[in-house]
Structure formats: C-alpha cells, structure tokens
Length: 122
Image 1: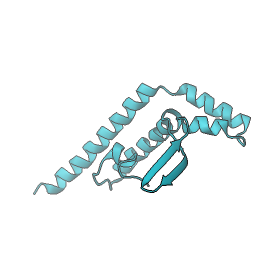
Image 2: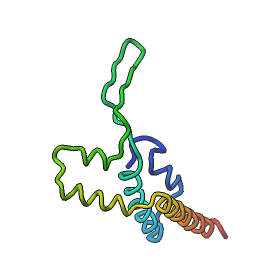
Image 3: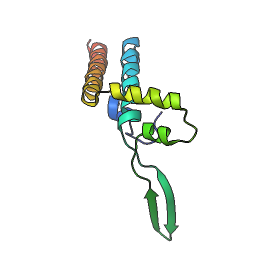
C-alpha cells in the first residue's frame, strides 16, 4: 500500500494490528479524509531529471503543486471535472479536516489498545 516506509499509512495509523470490523470502519473513514487532505492540500515535487556523474547524483524537481493542481493543468482534463474539483476544494476546511483525522486516529488507537488489553488480561 505504501512505497516508502512511514510515507502515509504508518504515519497516520502506526504499527498496531487492526483486525476487527470496528477498526476497519475507522480505517476507511481515515483513508477517505486523508485522500482529500493529500490530493487537495499537500503539495508534492515530482522528479523531472536525474543525472549521475561518477558517484554524485544530481536530481531536479519541478515546482511543488498538489495533485489537484496537476490534474487541472493536464491537457486532457475536461471542464466539468475541473469545475467539480474546484467546488469540492472550496468546501474543504484544512484545520477542521486535520483535527477530524487526528480524532479518528486516536479513536482507532484506543480501539486497538482496548482489544489488546482484553486479550492480555487473564
């Protein structure tokens, strides 16, 4: 699910084991909110060139932009989809979204720890 260690998944939910239906529901809520956060608010730099001169590697990146901005700039993007994305973007409240994600991850951790506590109690 993630390409690099600690990229998004482990950063959000940690290394606990989640295997109940309640935990799955929380994880799905978190993934949906994180999808919005990542695609609309987090700028990313794309690698455009990589040169190797003996042991030295030089990398060039483009200007940081969000996946939404990249999609809007793409030549095959239709006007209707751009309008829908802009309307969705206007509805996002970044601070509230971040707080909601943090609250859900805290609830998820509490569920997992309570489950683990029940298992370890004799």
